[in-house]
Image (cartoon, rainbow, N blue to C red; front, side, top):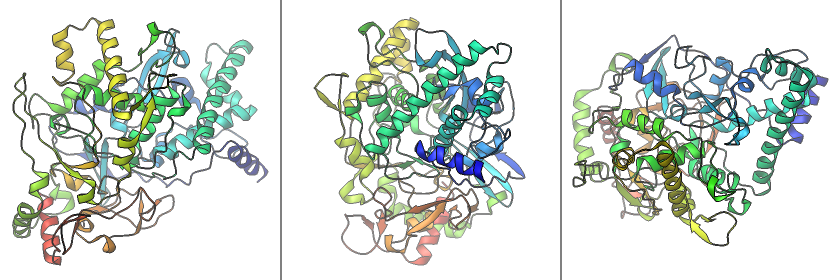
Length: 561
């Protein structure tokens, strides 16, 4: 008990809590659905590096779980432990030699982010960590490639920080850690150097946590399946990477991880329709997930980065395919596992959909561009009409940053990210000797345009059954509840379970140990808007009230998309 008390005191003093994590029970089987990917494509996507960095690989594999113990405990990187954060276990393979979960990637970067230093093996997160879903029913799991993950990255970062802290503060833990990291070169000198590096990493983490606490930067706990990607990523790019803390901003507009199928063929992407170019979008995502990018220092070093545009482009090509519908496809409703679709109900629902939904969700196509490519036009619905929680859109629209770093001029977040991603891409293209024609192809034949409308997108609904919970902030647990007035939706529910409800179409929301209680009364978490109720349209009302039969008929039809 004394050991537990001491460890708890150390963690609390450093600003770390001990997250209560759900137990992990593996499914009896995992089935991949027909989404037009081969097994080789899937395996590569799960572990290809975008150029991000969590920790040196030897550290990540050597750390122990942050729980009280007088003796060695299981490794932090144990698949069953990482699964408790929602990461999907994945076996050892040529693409995954360490047996890490889906979305973890090995790479080799310069030591501690100094881009002119010798490289070392690192572990980082890649696209698949947030964009690979899974639903479970009757002991069987259905893998959803490109679907929203059910990960709690906040708890993961907290516990990873706690593991590093306990390693630095506990001599027995440090000794075990050092023996694993320094295999073949374990000397007093190398141990001293390792301790110095560990303390430096811990100090940097404490500084970030301290700034976040003092500025109350992250007041809305995200839980499973959500992240304020634009807010947190903006803080990392504009403040952490530049060293200009004036650029820190409150990030209280978390959003669900969006589905990736068809996204390369949308005219604008992100929930707020902020980005046009695929290279700019993916560079920003990689930088926000802690790639190392030089945004301060001598001019000759600016915009050097560990981001890998060549891999990013290969990912985008695999997702897109050569034409719409020829890359990653939305998953078909798996009738053999989740039950058959009632054809008569679905046919009646189809008529409701055409009358009530198609106007926003079935957009047209752009005129062909110079490369003969056409894109799906995504309807942007103003906040005043859709009535959903406005924070994600407004935060980005209102954000300003001092840029270039150290100056007194401010730019919008959209303008700053456009500049950064354009410069990073240009520098990489020049260093790699990429000719102009190939650059245009890697950019998707589109200019790196950014904007910040006070609106949310209405994307096509194919595969919508596999993307619960709903609304941009994940505040509505099922498709059935999406068709209810807000006051009849769950005001609070639990997330983190992958147990699927095929009738209402969503995950189980019952309380369970380690689950995240989603409270829709918290600003940023509102579940109002996009409602069918009688009255004038606008302010969240998008259509007339539905009967109970009409709701279920619509749900049945949406399974077919």
